[in-house]
Image (cartoon, rainbow, N blue to C red; front, side, top):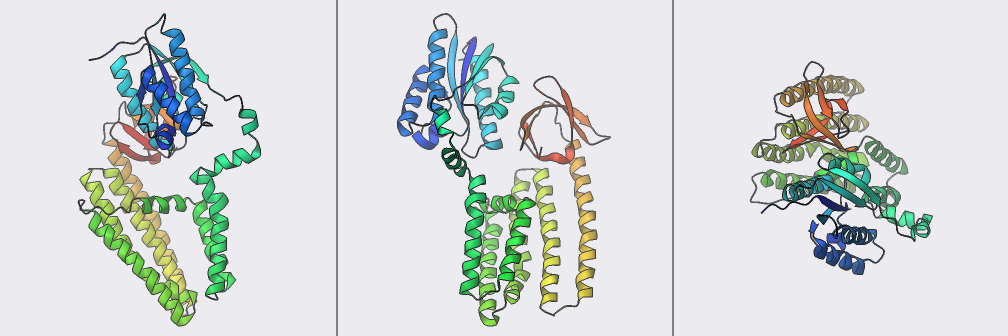
Length: 400
């Protein structure tokens, strides 16, 4: 049965500390649930500011409930933050608004959620007051030591601050154990830094996160074969190196890499077909072509360094692959634009991977390949269709 509340008090736990630290599943609705959740979170981590956010919301609830129809809710996101957390909070908020039909709300957070979550709330319900809860000890806690500790909990910063030195130590140790020249180690580390600059590191990490073998899914069989081939490549590479003591001979094992990629992308394409997701199908096909182009150039260079191919063949391969990359780029872009234009995107929500919630689609400028978006403040902006990454349910994810 639908209830009617004139005002909502909305507390936000964007990184879902309620579950991560106190094993409490959100959203929390009502004074009792919020009080119990805040107490358990405070006991689990007395320094956690999210418990203070909820306590502050309860204080406002007690003050307003004597004279107004009011309800308190706590929305919980996800420890991964970003789009995942935003989408979970959006789903919770929509269900609560549908249930209580509030006229307005009071938004309470610790400040971290404002930039991403405020536009989502503002687009759905009028916000009377925004309150940022700051612990009185914040000035002491914000000393450099504590700020660094907090940042290192974030996987993004820990990969940079701890991951890069660890990688250097590992490569140096491998060079000493296997008598590899430091020049080769420098080349590998430079390639890693270039890949990180181009964003390839996050892409590779996302691939490995998705390598989940579940034999109830048809796509798991080719993915399982891909994993076996990758393990085989590593074993062959180590064997080649032990026999020849040449890092280049070891890298020849990469010639088997396309077979692993073929099975991997067959699995991803099967998933896309089953989900009827044309954009993901295009995306994985494009990634496959791009990696094959890079592999062809890399193998040509390795064989040239081993004096098994002439420089003319290497240059010829690079020119051909460069031409193929241009053709494939424009071909996939053209197909992607046509697919998006054929979809009914009106009133779908647009969420940026960097900027968070942007607004709702009002239409498409097919002539210039632009999405016409209306922001929560009523401003109309246009964003190129090329930025669209995924279209799922009622949301459009863009790299923006």
